[in-house]
Amino acid sequence: MLLKTLLFRFSYFMVLVLVLALPSVSGAAQSKQAEPSVKQGYIVFDQVHVLPMHTEPVAPDQQVLRKQRVVVQGDRIIAVGAANELAIPQGATLIDGAGRYLLPGLSEMHGHVPPLADFSGVPKRYLDDVLTLYLAGGVTTVRGMLGHDRQLQLKDDIASGKRLGPTLYLAGPSFNQHTVTSTEQARQRVREHKQQGWDLLKIHPGLSLEHYQAIAAEANKQNIDFAGHVPEAVGIKQAILLGSRTIDHLDGYMAALDGFDTVLTPEDMAPLVALTKQHNVAVVPTEALWQTIIGAADSEKLQAYPELKYMPARVVDGWQRYLQQASGSYYTGATAALHAENRRLLLGELYRAGVTILLGTDAPQLFSVPGLSLRREIPKMLEAGMSPYDILRSGTVLVGEYFADEDQFGQVKAGQRADLLLVDGNPLDDLSVLNQPAGVMVRGQWLSRQQLDSLLADIAAARLTESSTP
Image (cartoon, rainbow, N blue to C red; front, side, top):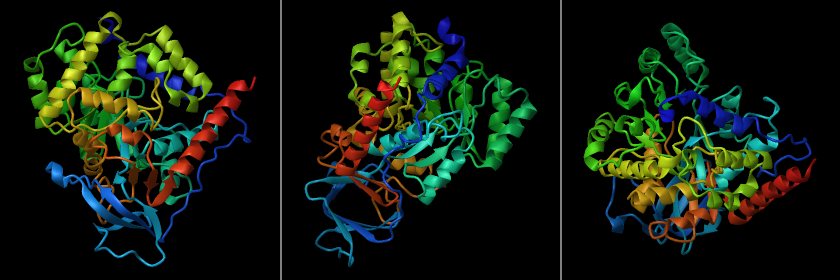
């Protein structure tokens, strides 16, 4: 069966679409990215309704705190309290929150970041634009799932304020059948990634079970996570048992359940769902992208996405070519609709069983534009039966718990990193209010709607200029 072969080739095809299909841009066409800065003065959100996103599920009447003041200094939230009780610090910058809702910034738990400007000829403009697009979509944290040279420097530059962007937690270069040649070499490579400072190991298809076991054993010894795909020779059960921190794209489940050709029932899925929950393995579904990859998405709707105007023309052309000549190890063609329905049912069963679900879209990928791709993924999560509150948890507090050893973020409370999203309506009533935030704060730096619109307009203008250049 095509779906059970050539598992590695597709992943590298997608990387080539992302990296190699970029147009060349001169130094004169640099990004209009907002000036990075670390401000030590006070910023106060006044009279705002707060979704604190507590670590534990709460009753509906406790999910929103009304008419609050939230005080930020530097990159930290330092106080949250009722507006009629909490004083405004002298000299504070006030942000009017009346009638608006404040929640933690969202996370992209399977994202990608382009190389720096002098790496393989990739233009600096595109890197800054991707970082800006994440922020414009309300994404203040990204788990980058494929590392490359100098990306750790980029992470440090963002953290220090030299460059504006979401906080990055990064997987290193891929572990696959081409980069892993023996069990001892696999162990050595794990040690090297740990020493180099990567936050986790990226698993791609193609690994043998023996090599995967060696990676898992050494990763456990070195106290570094591994996550990503499920190699065919490994299978979903062994990936769970050996300790993959997350299963991305729900990879491996359909192969184990014969979900490509057979209508699945809850009873069919129950053993794997229970195993996932028992071993505390999280999933990053990336449902919207996967419908495109397997051939189940509406191609006309994909090509009409307004956010495509922010992507380089040659990248979008590559995405359109995929629609015309779809192929690869994950493409299911005639059975794609059944495959997509089984994935929806599986996500629902995982959710109802209490498996940790983390928000991710695998942007930038096929018609998945960084940050703005959340507006495509969230409806898929709703269709699977997830509540609006739990969808928000999947991109906020649950991500904060995932990275609890690194920092405190994902909630609106004192001591947390000041990553915040201000919106004009209650997202618990309508999650689409997330699509056009009134402003985004990342590590204490505030970007108003006007600033975001200006940055987006600059990116769109640059794309028009690039497309008209011979």
